[in-house]
Image 1 (cartoon, rainbow, N blue to C red):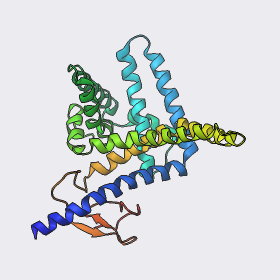
Image 2 (cartoon, rainbow, N blue to C red; image 1 turned 45 degrees about the vertical axis):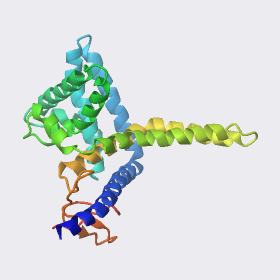
Image 3 (cartoon, rainbow, N blue to C red; image 1 turned 90 degrees about the vertical axis):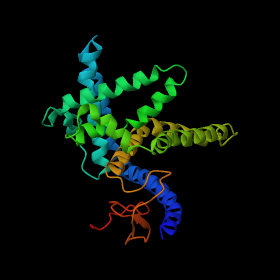
Image 4 (tube, one colour; image 1 turned 30 degrees about the vertical axis):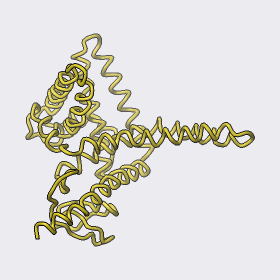
Amino acid sequence: QKRIQRERNDVITPVLLHSQRCHQRRRAIAVLVKKPIRLWAIGLLGAVLVAFLGVLGGAVPIIGVILTTPAQIGLLMVYLHGYRGEEVYSAQLLEVYEKKDDTWKRVVVGMLWKDLWVFIWALIPVAGIVIAIIKNYQYRLTPYILVQEPEVKATDAIKLSKERTKGYVGAMFGADILPYVAVGIVVIILAALARIRFIGWLFGIVLVVVILACVLFMKLFLGLVGAAFYEELMNPTMPAPGAQNGGEMKVCPSCGAAVEKGNAFCPQCGNKMPEE
């Protein structure tokens, strides 16, 4: 029975992992399509707020970091609320400052601790840059943990992030790079078509629209995908890539897809699963 279960998991797990990643992107796109102007406006306001606080920090870098870090993390919280299907509004940019228990201090200490370790890894000769990039992805959940899980010590957030992202670093890297690769291919094709006589100007207009949309909304999309990884990995419901043993499966009542027991949403259709 164990051998049969392992063989069954070897077949189902890769399919579910692929479906889950597609599900994250689909939900991120759905949120972006539903509230594009609001998310873009809040993102622009967040950038202006960070720039303003950076100017207030003056010539002392540490003061600038202390002032700007909570605002930067506040924008991540906006994306997290949006991914969860909650209402998003500009006041959420100040969420870190408004939370009790001096959350902003935890955020600053935790993020400085994270950046310090990434910097230390980057100092390794030859391979340091590659290792630092890997570590940066391993520590990627740190800001979410610092704000959403106050029981975790600020200096322990990177350890928890590393534990949760084990086996998912490649998936997170792919989620970041794939949109740019796709857009790059589209831009190259449109640029080539724009050289066609008489009708090339039509493709030129499409090219401008694609580039403009990328500039305006790519950061928003990646912010929502980043929130998706935290939301899905906060309560792991599926084995990491390469895992030997999967969990118990159940069936989605909406589409009939196999879903890991405990998963809040169906990775196939995105509908909420019934309470267990």
